[in-house]
Image (tube, rainbow, N blue to C red; front, side, top):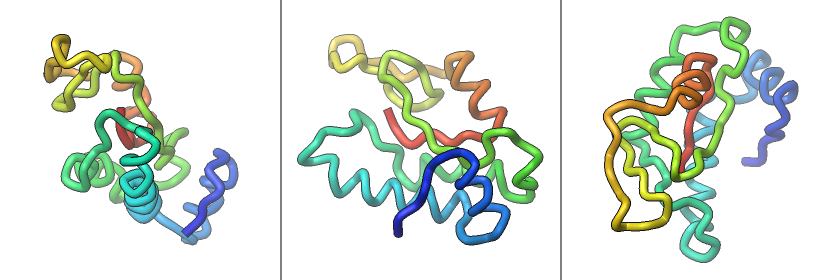
Length: 117
């Protein structure tokens, strides 16, 4: 499945029920997982289980209630996402933060969904 990820097109697709955040994110995750071994797109691609709380947070929300409803985003791996390893591509630096960085928290609060780091 191919999706236009421009914000207006994505919002229209959600409004018109051509897709849902769950369908989009799982499809993007599958594509990234297939490409990652060759292209190293992500240091950490969120698993389906790791994505679930972010997807569930949008259940019952109206598309127009959140400015970034269902918008996927990637996080540079020196920026924290709670519960997901931050490594800055250096295993000696790796740790698992308890809290997300402020900017990540703000994106989540606006309805965006992290795909990976």
